[in-house]
Structures are given as C-alpha cells and as structure tokens.
Image (tube, rainbow over all chains, first blue to last red; front, top):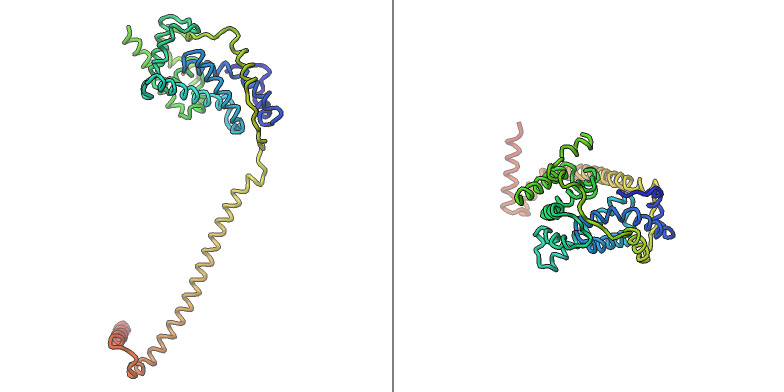
Length: 186
Length: 135
C-alpha cells in the first residue's frame, strides 16, 4: 500500500466522521490510496482512461457513502471492495456495449493494448496480459493482488470474503492456467 | 509457513522470466493531478455523527431484554401449570360429587322415566364394569 509519513489512519477516520473535517480528511485518503487503487483497477480494465474513470467513481462512491464506513474493517479493505465492484460493473457495461456475453472472459480488453499510448510493454508482456484476461474474474483478481501487489492472503480474504485456503488454490490454478496458455502459444 | 516460504512455493518459471513490470504507464504527474481534481469535485455530503463507543446501556440492553423474555416465559409457564392443577382438583371434587349423586339417585331417575333406553344401557354397562374391576 502507498504510504506517506504524515498519514495517520486512525486520526483520519476520526476526522471523516465530523462534518467540519471530513472533506479535508477524505482529501488525505485520496492522496494516500489513489495510486494503490489505480493499479488494482488498471490491471482489471487495462486502459488508462477507463482506469481513471473507474478510480474517480470509486472515490465518489466512497465519499457519498462515508457514513456507512463505521471503522469495523480497515479503510483500505473498504476502498478495495468498492474499487473491485466498480471495475467489475465497468467491464460488464463494456461487454454489453460490445455485444459480448457477460459469461465470456475479459480477453477483449487486451485487443487494443498494443496501440495504447500508456502501455510500453513488449510482446511477452502483452501475452501475459492476454493470459491473465482469459482467467475467470475471481482468479484474475486474486492473481493480480498476489503477483503484482504481493498482498497477503489474510488481507485478500478480508477484501474478497473468501477463505485463505480457497484463495491459495485460486492463485495456484491461475498460475497453472497462465503456464498452459504460454505452452499452447509456443 | 512464513510469507517467504509461501512465495517460494508459488514460483513459476514463466512468470519469473517475464518479471513484474506489466508495461502499464501513466501520464507524467498523473497522481498529483488526479488527487487535486478528485478532491475539488467531491460533492457536499451530510455527515451523521457516529458514536465511537456505544454506552453501557446500549451494550447491555439486548441481554436484559433476553433475560426479561425468559423470565416472562417462565412466569407464564408457572402460572399456567398452577392454574391447571387448581382446575383439575376442582374438577375431581366435582366429578366425585356427581358420581355419588348419580349412584344414590340413578334408580329414582330411571324409574321416573327421565332417562332414555340408551342412557339406561350405558349406566348398566358402567355398573357392571365397576363390579368386574373391583377385586
């Protein structure tokens, strides 16, 4: 997770619950979490402009429902959940717009990756993104959180509401599928 | 198992070869610009004050309600069983009294024509049954 020396989560949460200080405190939340959440979203929606829109919706949703955050869970967990839901909603909307079945995988998102000016990966990186996008949604999320963010299974479990055992299995299956994807293509 | 051990177990030759750089980039100064823009676009919301810690009464209240409910159920059962016992005692006294009255006055009642044939047969059967049961 991103960190700033001046960021004190307990104090920020306290200020979030008071009318006079909430807006300023939420500004600190944005500054603290925008990068982390952006990368999580970007790996899901692939395109930078789309990730920017989803990130914006994530913070707007969090802000307008800040009363619902009672501090029972970690703020990061709550924000991650919103970001994931917003990403999935966005992808489903995009599938509908492109006449793609909601049951299909998200490979279509990678089709424009090579022409994306905010992507400078080589062929093998495009291939990896294609392999990741072909995974079922939950495996894709687990793979991204584990492989790129190196998130602990315990934290992931809080966000995704799945047992750590199931998450480990999910990650294992995801890696195997990616390896098979590469074997088939070679 | 430590975090490092788990990571070692999860190693993949292909993924190691590719590395963790996804190739995704952002425009220069994107996050600073985003943070300012996002903060500025937040709409006005009304914050409801949240009590950080519930009072003792709020914490204890559900348990008290539950205890009162059980006490109420217990009292009702107690009253109901006591009432039933009283009723059955009164009923028994009444039944005994009726039995004695019937035994003493049955013949007179039958003779006066106040009972139907069926009543008389039933009465005689019961008298016979009583006689058989008696040692």
